View 1 (tube, helix red, strand yellow):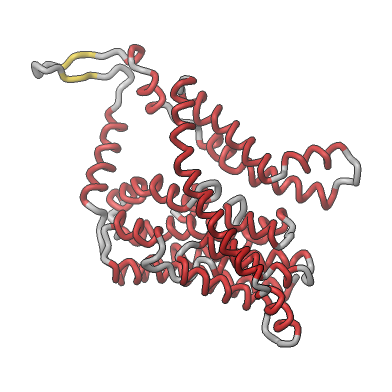
View 2: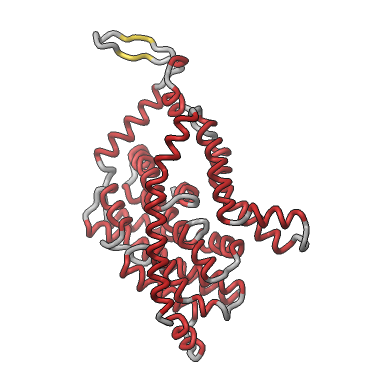
Length: 374
């Protein structure tokens, strides 16, 4: 489940990934006869770590731009930090979370997941429906609507994996081309264009329209409707990022970034530790990991100008780790987890909030260890 959460969380905002994964979490919990936390915590860890540490999520992506970090190196180091962090905060911590919060799958979601399982297991090639008189009437699947056909057909695993990882592969290709391709070469020019974050994400959307849209039997009208319905959630994300950027600029204009840079220059404190602390404070105050990352990266931009390429990427990861610290009642994710898992506030703090804190601290430790090597 940790791997599934990480793959789903790579291209998707945390809240959307949670909504998509929740039926799977409930179904696996009931079929395997496992406590809900044993299955849910690994999936949540995968979603959260990818959201906070690895581009192309908006927080890390904005931090890369604000700190002038190398995108490819940041992705590579982010994945390197993410793997042990997910393993520690996911499957390992889930054992203890299941003892502290011994809950089973919520009844409503369990019934829905079970119904989905039974329906998919019993769906024949040519189905049967019951008429109003109680007799079974044979229905030919060839006469079903396009929407039913789209719901029945699913893309293959390889196709799904290709679509999800496409933007990351393109951005990594650009980074490798910058290192190994000669200046002025055609390969460098092409990969520089395709690996630009906006272009890579746009190409991923176009490919998804074919693989997840037309490839599953959706008509043009259904595909257009799906794209239209995606605009409101995007607007919300844009407002969050814009608000964080505005808050960041307000703090930057006060000159706090230069003050911090000058203070660190004459002290022995690690810039990575300071970046983590700044992100933690903003996270606790605002409740948003994205706002914490965007704001902290703007404050620490003067400090990044004096650092090497590798350390600048580690600075992005330190900020990302701090932005995940102790999710509590001012975080929308806190309430989503509470309601979907059927927990009390105290149980959510003992499971979800503790997991977020473990991710944040272990991420910082790994970043500090990498700083010794790089």
